[in-house]
Amino acid sequence: MLQVTGVFKNYATAQGPLAVLRGVDLHLQQGESLALMGESGSGKSTLLHLIAGLDQVDAGTIEIAGQRLEHMNEAQLANWRRTEIGLIFQQFNLIGSLKVEDNLAFQARLAGRYEPSWQAELIKRLGLADLLTRYPEQLSGGQQQRVAIGRALASRPALLLADEPTGNLDEATSDEVLQLLLDLLANSSTSLLMVTHSPRVAERLQRTELLHFGRLATQS
Image (cartoon, rainbow, N blue to C red):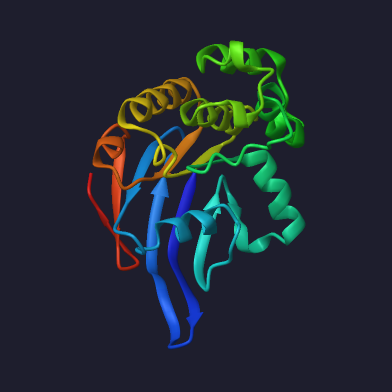
């Protein structure tokens, strides 16, 4: 599903180039869940952004479901992001002017994959039936994250990328939201790559990798 090979990424600073990723190799099978851990500044979010096609590698390759990202132009990448991947961030990034029901359907409609029956299933499993007419500002943090998860899964993406998706939630709500996410993924072919600083969260996923000074060391 995902193959990252020899990826390097530098950023320009006043002191010269800063090496963030130094030859990262990473693989993820279809339907597999992987936690990516590492200290602050180790390059976790940078790697996630590269895999999402939001930034370009300096060297190396990223291949997802047989497609090499460096072979796509900006329009192709934008279309690919709409149809093939789902993104979940700890900031939720819901659209404030849209009600919950419309936020849930937004990504799927953009991808041309809106399925009323799947939308109904997500609403039921995520416990959102009584919240559909509310706006994001009227929701708790846990409720907003449930909507963000539903939006990301609504288009049935091949790959789900999550950057500290429970980082802004208390421990009990984090556990609940994570369990809902894993339950929804259990019967799908979607692969999950999650950046997290929490060992408690990481141990719930099938495999863990540690990113340290721009290189990976397999943990399990």
